[in-house]
Amino acid sequence: MVIENIKPAEIEKRSFEIIGDELAEKGISLDAEYEHIIKRCIHTSADFDYAESLYFSDGVVETISDALQKGCVIITDTKMAQAGINKTKLDSFGTTTMCFIGAEDVARDAKERGVTRSYVAMERALILDRPVIFAIGNAPTALFSILRMMEEERYKPIAVIGVPVGFVNVVESKELLIKSGIPCIVNRGRKGGSNIAAAIVNAIQYTL
Amino acid sequence: MVIENIKPAEIEKRSFEIIGDELAEKGISLDAEYEHIIKRCIHTSADFDYAESLYFSDGVVETISDALQKGCVIITDTKMAQAGINKTKLDSFGTTTMCFIGAEDVARDAKERGVTRSYVAMERALILDRPVIFAIGNAPTALFSILRMMEEERYKPIAVIGVPVGFVNVVESKELLIKSGIPCIVNRGRKGGSNIAAAIVNAIQYTL
Image (cartoon, rainbow over all chains, first blue to last red; front, side, top):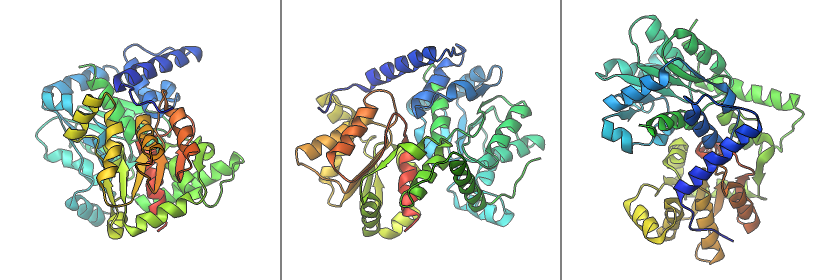
C-alpha cells in the first residue's frame, strides 16, 4: 500500500511531464523563455491559472539571472518566502536572502508612521551596499513602498518579483508595478503568494 | 496614487468580507464549524476551490485546539510551513514548531535507506516526549511515513493536517490519510501547499 522508495528527483520530473501534457491538452503553449518559471509556479500550487496570468517585462529573466550570479541581496516581504528559496546555489554565487519584517525597529517605525511593517521593511534596502531584487508574495503595501522609493528617485532595485496574493489593493499594486517600467515578474490578478515568489526565484536559479 | 496608511487588520477584515460575499454569490454556504479555516485558506491563495475540497474528520478542530492549548509540538515537512505559522500565541501555550527536513542525520539516514528526507523527518516524532500534530504541505512521502508508523503501531499523533500539493502520489496519500481514521484535516485533490498548512494552523489558533 504505502510506497517508501520514491526519489524526489523522479517525482519532480514526472510532475513536470504531467504539467506539460495537461497544458497541451488545454491547448496552451508557453513561451520557451518563461516556460520553466510558469511550470514551476503550477508545480507549486497545482493551479493551471498561472499558465495565463504571469507577466514578464522584456529581458527580466536575464537581468535577474545576472544579478543572482554576481552576488546580490533578495529581500522578501515574508519569512515564508525567504524559507522557500533554495540557498545552496545562491550561497555559491554570494547571493543572500534577507527579510526585515520581524525586526523590532521596523515594527517601531511602522507604528510611529502609521504604515505597515511591510512598507517599512522594504526601505531597509536603502542601507544595503549591494544590488537588490525584491521578492514580494504577500503584501501589496510592500510594492507600494518600493514604487514610492522609485517615484521619489530614492532607490532603484535590479528587479521586482511582485506576486502578492489577496483581495484588497493587490490587483492595483501589481498593475502599478508593471506600469513603473522596472524589470519585473508579476502575476496579474488576485493570485500569488510567498510560495509563488519563492518558486519564481528557484526556477530562475535552477537554470544557472 | 500610492496609499501608505492602510492598516493590516482593516485589510484582513475587508478581505474576509469580500470572500464571504463572493461565496454567497456562488451559492456556497460553509459549515459554521469550519468556516474560519476554509476562509483563511481562500484568503491565503485567492483560490475559491478550497471552499469545496477541504475535508475535516469529526471533532478534529476541537482535538487540535485542545492540543495547541496544552503545549504540543507541530512538526512540519518544510521550513516554509514552519515559517508561516504564527508563533506568538503558540509560545504562550507552550506549543512549539519543529522541522527536521534540513538536519544532517536525516539526510544521511534517507540516503542509506533509499527513502526521502521527508519520510525520515517524520520519524523524528518518535524521539519526542510531547504530543505531536503533523502539518504537511508539501511531501506525500511525509504522509506515507506517518501512515506507516501508525499501521505498524509504532506511533500515533494527535492529528494530521494533510495538505500536500502536486501531481504524483498526492491525491492517493491524502485519501489514505482520510481512511486511516486519525483525526485529520485534508485538502482533497492536487491542491494544497506549505502556505495552506500554515493557514490552517493559524486559523485554528486565532480562535483560541
